[in-house]
Length: 441
Image 1 (cartoon, rainbow, N blue to C red):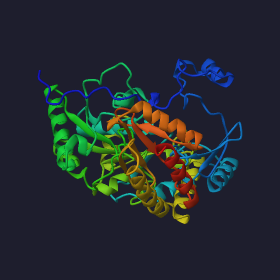
Image 2 (cartoon, helix red, strand yellow):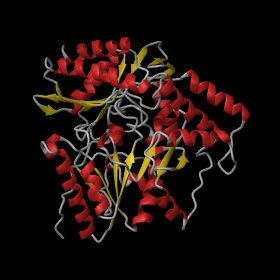
Image 3 (spheres, one colour):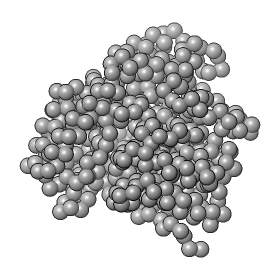
Image 4 (cartoon, rainbow, N blue to C red):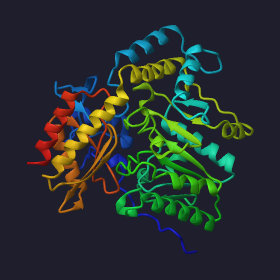
């Protein structure tokens, strides 16, 4: 059978980017202790890992007293160890923590406040403990409602680590090819689709639907990280997902927006990444920043999708939606509003991006700069070609400047930056000064 869409080149592995490599690094006592305890599943940042002991706001402190500006971890979206979350969690933990088989006011208070941030058609919430669980459930809902089993994702996507979700996470697979029911398509970039990203991406979605059909598989869903973070961060032009969503729905599939990375005001212009595309997803999955470090996640969906699923099987998660998680989540939503963090992300993000573009004019190692709000992707190159090794060198040199950063992209050659939304003007300038030192030398 001739495939309508060829399999993409194998993407760089997301867990290998900026990671400790025992073959190339000195193994300290602390690292050996971790390896002994965790074994082959151990994942540590940097060739020489950092032992962290404290964090506050946008800063993390290492055991040797070094302080690092955190431009990588998007989990503490309102800042590390935010007092509002600490107080809310402590008070609720001292009062009651149980499961959702009981009525607890703070759980429904949280869900209603969360729902208020979404378009009205999305009105049923199922709370889980991790984004992986949320995406797993969303995929199951999609299969039940569409009676299909095929999924379309981008070629460097990462959506989680359950057995089911790993199958739609190409950047997690080291040796295996994608299973027959999954088709991966290139990220929505000008490099892949030229000037008309919207139509080019929609055409690829249609080609993937056709390929699944040739394999005898009906499409169930289009599952997309709304900011394409693992693919290298793609945000513009606004609205480029609109036609692709129309294509998937005409084929009888649903659109699942994975907001684990871009959600909760990070893009500055919108509270949710999908909102920039003038579309209403059939389901939205959430995680990471939802509890600012307290493990919580969830799916919000149109009621008919949940009703169809529950005709066959119930869903209960012992820790999902517990009152302490609800307290943490409520504190996050309240703080985002009271401290004006979405506007801060928009204003500071625009300023930082403008300075980055200026720096790029004087640096041969910087390629394209993308992003929205406080989420950036910066391509690192050598002689105009994406260079993963140089990206690691930039990350290491930023560490010397006391700045934490990460990597992404198909070649692992995109610098990924996600500072907390509480970032200050002075901290933004600290980052820019350090970045200049690294890329202009």
